[in-house]
Length: 94
Image 1 (tube, rainbow, N blue to C red):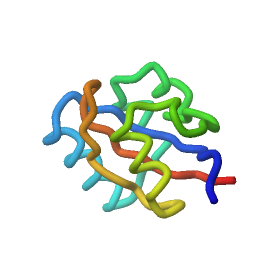
Image 2: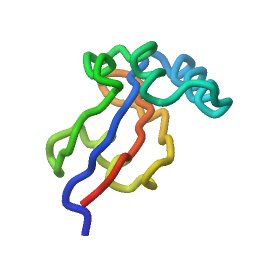
Image 3: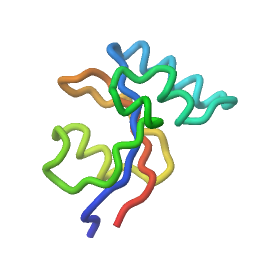
Image 4: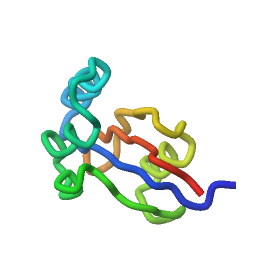
């Protein structure tokens, strides 16, 4: 059973913007970390979107569900929360 997830994210204000960023990521050329620094509306963008390790109950439910159920290494989303639209990358789990 997964107890903790290490994830990074890119927070966008609109679903449209999140989809644009996801498309740019799919085309390659820039890493998730670079795109987080450039596009994320969250302060974590300065640290390449890295949220560190977190357990259940630490994130809003929609984000947590995607992070705990998503496949490691894949870009998930956009996931809508009260903060906006997230692209989430699960870096590791334990």
